Image (tube, rainbow, N blue to C red; front, side, top):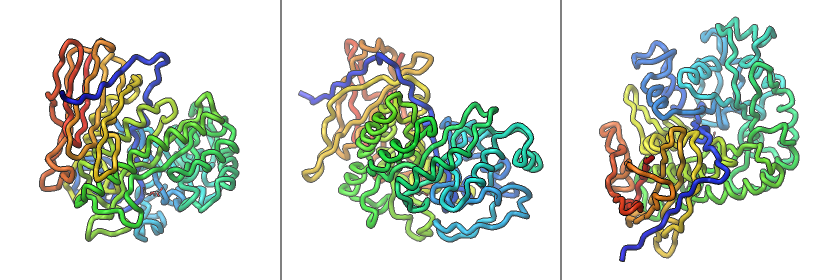
Length: 495
Ligand code: AHR
């Protein structure tokens, strides 16, 4: 008798929508993310739109990228936005103190970023400088990009070639205030937050902005408690959480050449997201039972040693099926907590950490993580369907983790999508889903898998890992029986 996991999916009594912003991305001035990644300049031979690579724009549109966070990260608290506007030849330089000490020419600034977001159809998420900036500087930035009437900042914007404001909704009030953002205590930051937030005006024409507080470092629940206690809910639209899947900060291991033990430990760290989100949400519920404040997991992803021979400050790493496992399980967690998690940003978009896109001069590749994001885009703004099951375990040398992760949703056209991940490195798993409960027919499926966990898309073999049609299921008397191979992601679709 084959062991099977019974997955029950029910219609929700009080439906919750999976906010598309869970599928957000992050672009920091770090290594080759902006310069030499997104931005090649308008004199480049690489086809571009106002200096941004057309192939990257097309790939991100295909993902339906809902929002993009910029300019950091740690960089945000060193960034002075006025240095990045006006004629490019007059712009001062900035030394990127956190990431490799490189000197940047500020040729990619506010206009470049916000115009890019318009081209992408993505909401910009600007991270303000609290660490080394001033209240006035951030208030001016909000006025510069958002104010429609006549004012010193809107006049300056117009002088720089942009009449209409961009109406930026999402504003980060600093980044990692407990660390690179100023090494503040939670109590001190809560005070700073209140002061900065007060002067970040909701200009009438914007329809209101969402101020997002710099959130905890992983399991620092005290940070969430202090912020929720000390900041009135009418002053805060979102509260961040950062969590990276890391084996050990002092010994992160190679991105490609990893052992099963390292795989297990990475997944243990990635799956911790479920506990983090649950516990931070419980604290937020205490102070905000109406769930007005969004939990914004505005940095997440796998973090390994940099690729050998590359600048250690550039955080460039390859992306394997292990990363596909991190992406699939983490996005399922976010979907299932859609009542509170309404924003998330994968770190980072291009050439940094768990990137969806890697470039090498004119070449570009899409990583396994990209393909998971693409398979899961169907959940954006769809209604969450609660899933219940008891997962079989993935065991390794006496340790164990849940092998199966799942989430489901129904989109506006009535299509149901079920995303499943089997993180087990060796064992396939059989799952039974009662289709009658959902009235599902005509099921089709897509799979992302490969021969080895360590497989990746290289510049020589860019399409080694790609989603394929999946036929490993049968529909018997309203019960769908599916065998999901080891380390693979499957998305089912039916109506
Ligand atoms: O994403 C890389 C860095 O990780 C960010 O700059 C910082 O916020 C975090 O520590």
